[in-house]
Amino acid sequence: MRQVKRYPVEGPNALWQLYRTVSPWKGVRNFIFIQIARYCPILSVKNAIYRRVLGMKVGEHTAFGLMVMVDVFFPELITVGRNSVIGYNTTILAHEYLIKEYRLGEVRIGDEVMIGANSTILPGVTIGDGAVVAAGSVVHKDVAPGTFVGGNPLRVLERKSPS
Image 1 (spheres, one colour):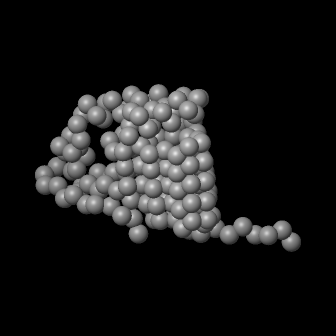
Image 2 (tube, rainbow, N blue to C red; image 1 turned 90 degrees about the vertical axis):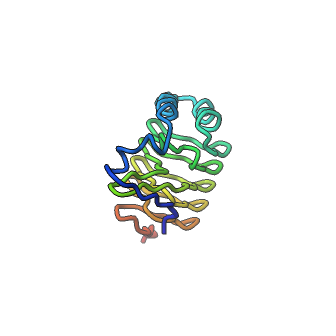
């Protein structure tokens, strides 16, 4: 079950009310630095941006692939453990703006986790140490340590042993 905090809104949809919840200047600043990090081929520079500018917690030797998109408005709610790989074009969200509410949730990705390309990680999920997320997956619930998951909806996948 995702751990998100819900905030009801009155009036227009929650996205119209975005700048009541986060400074527009924070959004612009974060957007610029996230775009730099998305295209940066130097992993240590990319991680420095995530840690020092955006306030993410990123473990040693973690590698973010090209075009990874982290949450623009709440990157400080994202934690990634050591020696993990976040695949090409993955999106990691810590917020959801809906019609009648918005939701915030910490994203915790453990140590030595492999996230396949083009995956989406939704707010409030924890991905345990050593887990593997198949390419193109939507992670909408917690993933137990050492589990191989994939798809949309997300499910546990089994590797068949050779016959």
